[in-house]
Length: 141
Ligand code: IDP
Image (cartoon, rainbow, N blue to C red; front, side, top):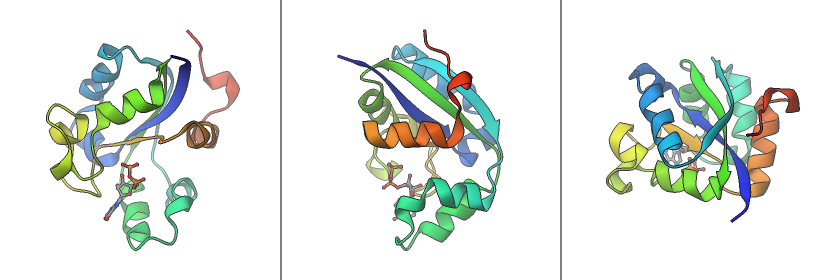
């Protein structure tokens, strides 16, 4: 399997719960490496630009409010099959549907405050990584 990079965000609810270390530990235990990391408090415009693909969805406004409600930890995860592996670790979007042992089952409260974001394809990953990081901020292992 090819080595990939994917963008992960530990969302404001999980940062508030003091769960950054626990979540990063899950990535590392699963064989993913943290190739880049920064803590940010997104502006509403930052959040809106990042989620522009969801602009027409009814939850877009709430999503932008939530993502700019407190600090987040943005990381680039690197490893074999990193995009799908991260999605598996995250679990379903709605924590009620998330499999036991996934990050969302263990840390998320609701479909909007759902602990983590992860890129869903190679194209999305490339765009999302470039939204937050320059090449000199990402460290290959
Ligand atoms: P994903 O984060 O599992 O990839 P997406 O469908 O890409 O899910 O949605 C992006 C984010 O928008 C979700 O993580 C969640 O925070 C929020 N979201 C999605 N659907 C709903 C909804 O029906 N109500 C409120 N928020 C939603």
